[in-house]
Length: 348
Picture 1 (cartoon, one colour):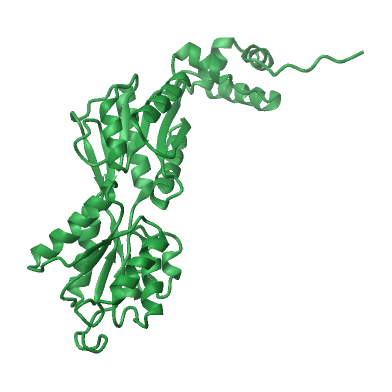
Picture 2: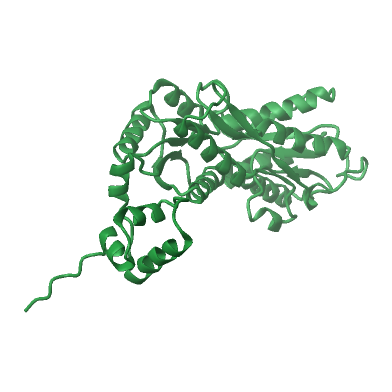
């Protein structure tokens, strides 16, 4: 005779086991304050003994709350978006929410609309959109959503609440550090034109030089990869001895490529050319030499993004379109020890 499979315990089973009402079990699960400690302990003991797990679908039907948030992200193979996604998931879990993620290779209006439809069908209560590219920002601006949306990395002008690391400030810290060390000028290897972070970092670099009365030199451009940084470094090596003594690179991966190209050209870092990166990836302190860089506080971005989204979900008052900026931090390492004019490469 085949034995029927055991069914999972229900809330009614827990109530019988604990000798209380169904409503009392519900109150304990909901952490209601009007339950005596003795009764709460009895219910929790029964739950543990029976292995009861609450049915989240039934709970959602009863409360009309799924406690699920959505995230739309692109280019999550890159350090910044990947770190942002991880920070969002951690912050959501800390608030008792699950996260449903849709990753897009390329953000278009159609792809973004499909992603939001998918999340809507899954019953998410709100969405965080990691939108670092201008094309993603433009796509977001064209759509209307059936739930609150918070953007990350999109910059101003989108018309929805957003959270960003202050990229311009980070670039000012990096460029100002090099000027304060005695360099007369600072070159820049920028990221892709379509990325708002790249635009903001280049703006901060340019503004810091201009405020110091320095004419910004040639700006090179990469695609965030070490290879593109290596190619930029090969070009930069040709300017050593003709005024180039310092470079601010828009991310650490490109800085890795720059360092290798300079080393192969016989250029010493930092004795001949100082180099600053951006991001403070885990490997940057193990570069040769260890890289001075700008650290982004991704955990703070995650916490603030989720907090803002939950404020919207709960209907709490917010400014019309709040933009929250998280301050970055300059991390000084051996790639930029103080520059002494006259001790650089011959002819500098």
